[in-house]
Each structure stands twice: as structure tokens, then as C-alpha cells.
Length: 408
Image (tube, rainbow, N blue to C red; front, side):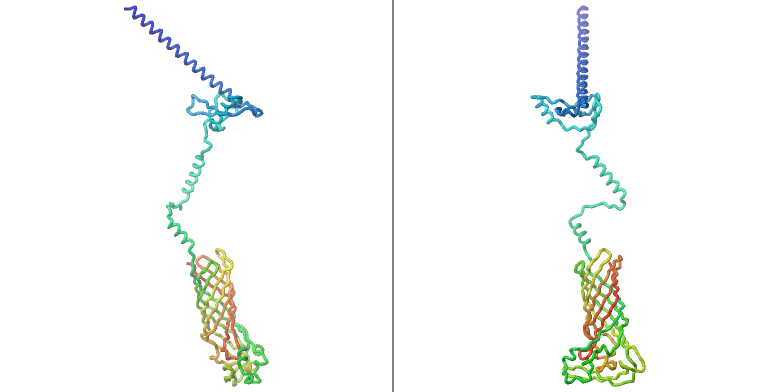
């Protein structure tokens, strides 16, 4: 019995020692294999570093070495000599199946371990992070930034219409100091429609001009008006309004004794004589005077305005109007048919007339107010006197027109 127990004890001890011996041998073999693998990798890396570029027969391939001390996989570039035959085919297949390796992290000096962290070259993560950071800074610094809400099609169309809606109507008040004058001429229609046999032999219009017998000079007048303008396009406007004018001019005459004078009128082909009293002479007298003729007129100008050039603040343009006119009141001294005296006959004045005007201007936009200034000329198309009178008078004004409009 004791002998059997001793036999089991000896057998167990021997088995234990044998198992420990075999484990030690396997561990040593594994370490030797690992050391040999590291040595081979080091030699290949050294050959990559020391290889001269004058050897074109070498080709690049990649291998992966597993580092036991790191959890990541390092990618190492090695240079392997080109083999012939089946070896070259195997290398070509290996190159085609090998992944793209980043060169970043490869040292110029040979080392026993080439361990690096692979960096993805096809990612924009760092740029995206930088852009997001910049946007966050801008949004943080912009205290007026409001949250952007999704816009519907209707809101986009409405915003576009609001931004592009232009002001069509505009009202303007203007005033203009003027210099008033007149143009005198013979009434040609008066002479054409009359029988020559009925014309007096001493009628001065047959051999003399009226301007040779009168002396006159301009005087100061003024103009006030209110108009409405409608925008047809970016450069063209139509306008209409109401306007008040005062025209004045002076006539040189001599105070003389009261005398009876005659004005001849053309009454449908025959001469009618109008007798009137006069105390002013065109030739001589005991005192020289300047007789003032004036006229108060109201008109309704209608016309167009065109912008030649413009920018955000300044515009340059021109305008023209036609003005039906009514004479409210007047004081006019008419020359007699013999061109020797002046007399007043109010019913010989034409009450309805037509004027036209032309102007150029510069417009300046100063925020809530728009100023318009420029020269203007106004001309009376019809004579101041009725067609039966032998002399024609056309008034005209030169002025500096200043207008003001309010921008709403």
C-alpha cells in the first residue's frame, strides 16, 4: 500500500516537471520569433532610408508591423527589390491590393521602431471645426442678429415687391423771380384782310415799324405754382398743376395835354375807327414818364419732365409745358394807329391766351426734402391784344425756378 502511494507521488512529480519544461521552451521560442521579426523589419527600414535614388529598379511596397506595446496599427514604407518571374507578379498583386499609406510620421533617421499615428488626408474635420468656430464668434459678437426663420414663397415675393415698389406720385411747390419783357410787331393778318383803298394814306404801318416809335424796358415779375407729377418710367414724368404769374414792363412816354386820338380796327375787311382820349405822347411833352404795364395771370400748365442723367442724390433734366392762361387783371397802355400817343382801352386786351415754357434743372435729394433749381423761359403764343388791333404784343419771361418736394 505504501509502495503504491510512493509510485503515484513520483509519477505526479515527474509529469509536473515535464510540463513546466515544455512551457519554458515554448516561451523562449516565441520570444526568439518576435525578435527575429523585429530585426527583419529594422533591416528593411534601414534599407529604405539608405537606398540611393540612382537605383530605379527598386519598387515601393508597404507592409504593416504590429506593435505589441501600442493598440494602433503603424504603417511603414519599405523598399523591396524588384524580382523577376513569378516573384514580380506576386509583388504587383501585392502593390495593387496595398492601401494608400501616408508618408507623415516616417523619420529620416533609421530607427529600430517606426511607430506613428496615421493622419487621414481626405478629411476636412479640422476646417469644418474652424469654420464653425468663426461663425459662432460672429454670431456671438453680433448683438443685432435675429433668428432667421424659414421663408415661404409668399414672403419672398412680398419682400421683393416691397423693395422694388417705387413712388409714382410726387407733388411740388415752386416759385420763380422773373424778368418780364415783350416783343412788338405789326399784325400782318390785319393788313392782309383789309381793303387797301380804305387804309388811310398817313397810316404809319405802311412805311414804318412800330419798334422805331416806342421805347420800352423789362421789369421784375414773379411766378408761383403747385404741380403734381406722375412717374411713367425711371426718367420720364408727366405733370400738371396750377400757376400764378405777374408780368411787368415799362414804356417811356411824355406827359402832354389831353388830346383826342384814334385807333383803327379791322372789322371783317373794313376799317372801324375807335376814338379815345390820351395825355401821353411818344414824341414830346412837358415831362418824361415811365408807364408801367402789368398783367395778373392764372394758368394750368401741363407737360413732361425728362431726366437726362442721375445718381442717388443728384438729377439733371429738362421739362416743357403748355399753359392755357386767363388774364385776371391788367393795366396796358396801347399805342394809337398813328404811333404818336398812348391810351387805355381795356376791352382790346385778350382775356384767354396760351403760354409755353421750357426749363432745365438740377434736382438734389436731401433725405426728406427734394430741391429743384434751374433757369426757365416762358413765352406767350398769342398776342396780348385782340386780332382786330393793328399791333401784336407777345410777352416772355426769364426766371430762376426753385421747386421743393417732400419725400414720404
